[in-house]
Amino acid sequence: MTTNIIKYQTNTTKSMTNIEHDEEFNERKYKRDYYDFELIGNGISGYSNIYERIDEIKRCTGIDNLEMVRPIVEKNSKNMKLKIKVKEYSDYKTLTKEWPLDSFKTGIKIKKSYPNLKVIVLDVQRNFKANQDNIEIKALQDNYGLYNIRRIHNHKNQPCNKITAKCKKISDFIDVIKDGVFIGSKKYRVIPHTVNYRVCSKCGSLKHQQKDCFKAQYCLKCSGTGHHIDNCNSFFDKCINCLGPHKCFSDKCKEFAQKKIFINRFVLKILIGEKFISSASDILQVGNDSKEDQTSESSDTSKLNDLIESIFSDKINNL
Ligand SMILES: [Zn+2]
Ligand SMILES: [Zn+2]
Ligand SMILES: [Zn+2]
Image 1: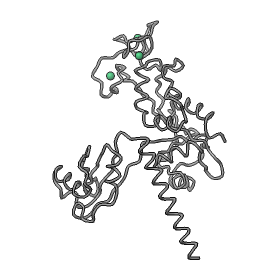
Image 2 (image 1 turned 180 degrees about the horizontal axis):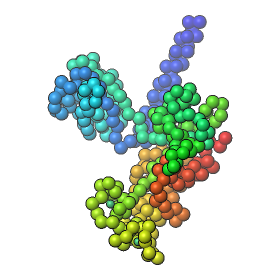
Image 3 (image 1 turned 90 degrees about the horizontal axis):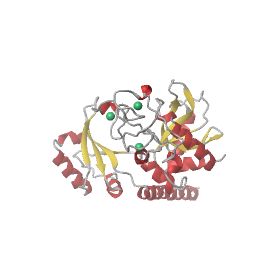
Image 4 (image 1 turned 30 degrees about the vertical axis):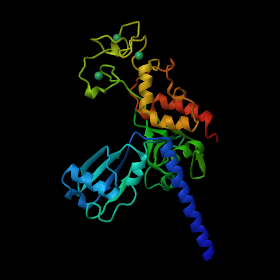
């Protein structure tokens, strides 16, 4: 019996190492723009300025090329924690390992951040409750590394037959897209979530949104001034950003397409790297003239995701 336990433990340790190895492989293959984490400890507030904090981090870990060290005071406890950002994965690895017991005098805890990856589970019955009390939700969290699991609602706030979830690891993201997920005894298809970009609804800019806009109202169809797109009488489209013969939020616009690729670059890098798609245009309709729409729907129910659904349904987790 002892032999069995030892054998079991050895196997467990081995597979744990493999998981860590896979994750490190994925993190290095699909680099994030930056890596961040939180440093939590009672002693932190005793370090009153940025230089003292940076010095202490360097003393404890040897790392000094930090992109950001931002103190955050927690509302209830008034405790101070530090949000730290670094550019390199290797620095992140070092910084999120064990720290000396006397770090920031009383010791610290690390709260790592997850990569920004989201998926959509398709065809989930509308009466399925996506909340913490549901054991099926717990199973999705435990078995697939998913969290923040939520029902998608349409613009009338009615439940859709889809739920979204964030992924704790890159490998979780890849695995659920490849294989789908089980809820109970039924398997469900999973597709990647991408963000649909919106131009500034006031001036059509790709650089800001309406709440930050100081420009005059431009027509998003003809780029004329003095009227809204809803009242546009022009027979012609003219793009505000590239001056081409299309609306400024059209997929025909190279600048708009580039912006969409840019904001989805991390997920696209993984989808291409894992050969789910061969290029961004497979799912983002870059330079295509089939879609020209800036509706008021939420991004979760956007046509972009409908498109991804149709493409991915053909390509992957055929059940
Ligand atoms: Zn604007
Ligand atoms: Zn117009
Ligand atoms: Zn354009």
